Length: 42
Image (cartoon, rainbow, N blue to C red; front, side, top):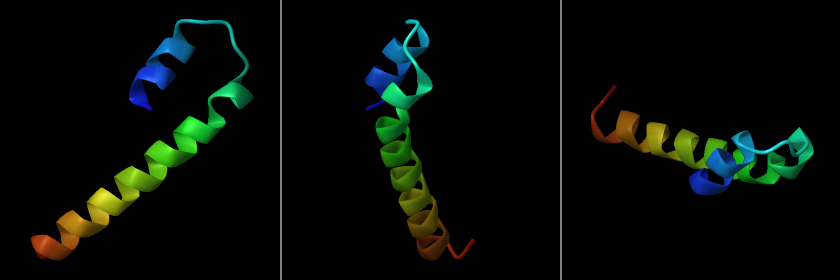
């Protein structure tokens, strides 16, 4: 997913073409942050 986002930044495609990938990345980051907070009492 991150590679797709990186490739998109180098192209002239519309933002809508990458939205699905960005949404996925945001959800995964939120999950990781939640787990870190739980595991390390942050």
